[in-house]
Length: 264
Ligand code: 1HE
Image (tube, rainbow, N blue to C red; front, side):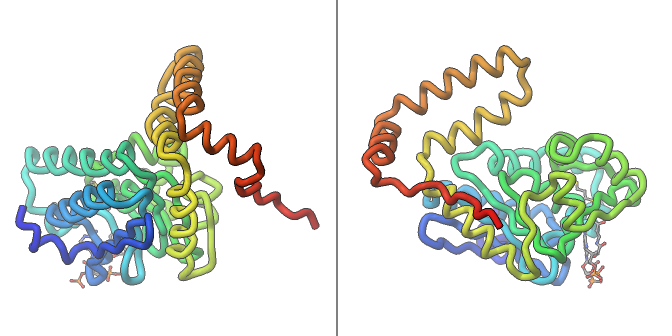
């Protein structure tokens, strides 16, 4: 892949320990083409090498309108399945990679855009965000991991409803359905996502690794297997030299206390 050809589809910045990847095809509502998905892959790989957490956001009025339908219309079945598998690989590096990712959502979070957001670890939506899976209307199926990731977030009943009826969920509904964990005022999603990413970047790398890699696997395990793996991970993290230093910092009152929510 010619790197110069795909660089303009994303912007990339490093803010301290946090990498910011901006989806940058606003004229096409950040619809993801084959070259665009490679640009995301390159940016994610770069972030893994130099950042401790990342934010993915969209330039323009929308996060992402999903698959590039103009490009897709010309594809053969084998090109389609290969394209889908490539999305799986790239979004898999986000979900199961080295650093936590926060998605900052606004406007359309649609089709493959929702699949991309679902591969991140935390989703922040501003009040302009809306969620839809219009694949049924386009005679396609989800192909970027939505049937696995988005279905696990919102549940298969809600996802079936969205896909069969074309239902568009507001930011507030999205929060109730677990598609996003935070709602902020219009225009504030990126700043909030950066704040959350900075918090995650400040965690011990080992703990973040356990959250990213053990937690989702445990969800897919039988209960007793999950509990067993939890004990292994708990011991593995808590007996590390880094844990000893952080535990001592707490006991010696050198560590920040929790922000206790204020009561009215
Ligand atoms: C696109 C795409 C796209 C916009 N592929 N070109 N996704 C969808 O079915 C969503 C389709 N898009 C929309 O419903 C609307 O564009 C939006 C609600 C997101 C935004 O509306 P609006 O009025 O701001 O923009 P627009 O006028 O509809 O679009 C502006 C341009 O972006 C226009 O191109 P132009 O050359 O005529 O200016 C659109 O054609 C173009 N555009 N969305 C290509 N998606 C791995 S499988 C995943 C499967 C899916 O993702 S299915 C869901 C696909």
